[in-house]
Length: 377
Image (cartoon, rainbow, N blue to C red; front, side, top):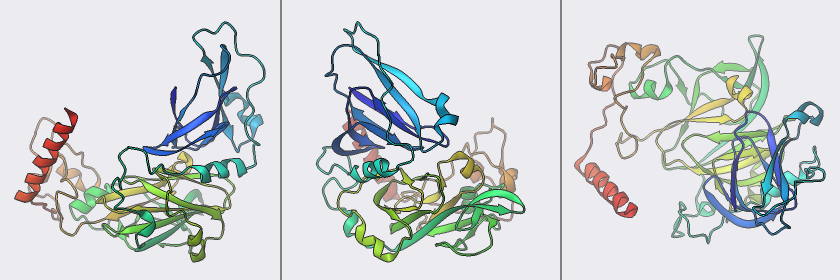
């Protein structure tokens, strides 16, 4: 039987286990992994796993338990989730104590589990290099970012920051501000690409990503709580974890062969996690913690991946039903008017970035559409 479990919480990692049964891990966040059996699985905020369970025990009922990890069990004792695995021919109820989770504050079990999760390179599933022509271990890195989270105080208010910069949400969405060339909304290139001793500040900084480049991002956690990170619009290879500090020599420990490709990565206290990703998706993308309190109070930033060709093949134009606000609020039209705001005369001093569709682009679009239809038949 296949189980797919996601941690959709806002702050706490969980450990999942089934009484008397092994969990055979087969997939995480869209990537098939080398199959291994575990007594339990640590699932951090924002992460998802698929595992197989064989009903090979005596007919009966068995406890399924999900409990918090790395927190005070006295406080969180009431949030332990319990369910029942019921065999169809069962005549007995689940008995005995709930299956025990790993040692609460010992990260070694969770860390060893993280190291053991590797990409299945032989599974017959869609991968970004199904023919073996693309291999992350042999691609030169042309950008490196070191992101260190911290709890700070800005203007005598508690905030969270990345490299001492706490993100300030503007009234005009970044993607629209870029599309319509609205100045003063954000600043590209001012964000420090590694930790510094600057005074904590609140800013709307955006880091520049090289289109079709290969980026290395290292998340640093010198705090006492485990953290998870996500990048909108991208998956990434989780190539390494280790104790702080991270140095250039740390790259020698990277897994450059079968690192798993996923969407969310955990960073253990006092450690670093390194990911590699190909910046092939044009747009304005959010890099953030998955811990809601930290995200809300500024532990995030944006990465701008820009295509100088302004091609519709790389990024679609603004949709006709987009909602405008902030400095672009005057572009909003009544809902019953179906004319695209992007085609209306500008009522601001900003100019519009036009993306003309070339004949070849349209032909490619039609071909792709036909291929999808054929594949779906």
